[in-house]
Image 1: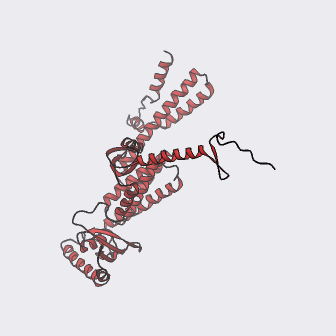
Image 2: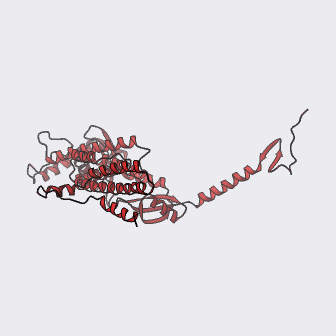
Image 3: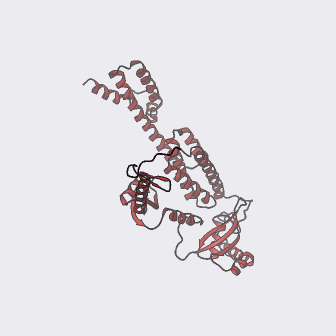
Length: 399
């Protein structure tokens, strides 16, 4: 009868026998060592609350996990942020994110001012959809006025947060009706001091006067169309290139989309325009990094949504893009000249140089063209931006 041969315990390298089972002590020791190291590393991690400025000049706050203050600062620098304040805290990133979401569930973007009261509301928006949330105001009358005038909601319920069940039932019935009547009476007193042209088209109950459309209403329609077009464009871009977009840009794109959808129901025209331009800027930068952007596409889009403030950005973008292309092609040209003279790659390098020259002619700056036109028909011999590089390289080559 054959039996399995087994080494004595003192000769079995790292092995012992117990109840017919063999266990590798090396594995046990390694597992314990890794577990101790991991627990030690985990215990050394801390949460740091930061206030920083990104490369667009925007101020941001949050919580980051790191081993020490230096590591936290390096992580933030890796996200292209300039740290203003960095201090250790007991708050976790999950708690900070939860607080951020709760703060943004309210209609106002800013924090509540001292003396303000939070009101819970239910309403119907301009598109007939049911909405609910909270709004901050000094009293119920101002809360109703803000919902109706600023957001164009038809309010069906409004009550102070934490009110009793009896108060809630009263506001669902006669309480809200009386509040609307009180607001309407006060608005009539205010309207009596205005001319017909100055009176707003939207009445205090959220209805719309179809007989007259004010210029402000037309502007609002244009902005709503711009918000819809740009957010739809940004959503489609993120859905298509989700895995390729820079995480930093992806975060800003999603944040701008959410804010614009909230602002869509407000009358804050100036802030809406600012957010539209900012979202367009981030979307352009993301497309540019993926090699998908074109000057003409950007011009057509801004012209379509009709935002005058974007014109200066377009001009700056065109000049910046042209300058980058020129610098890049200059470097390629010098590299190919080295191949041509030093390595003897005559055929291929010469063809590349001819192609780069053609590209340079297409990238001729517009100011040179304008200068030629202003010379009253006399075409001047302007130096091409490629010549300084050629002269410098030839001088180095034959020294």
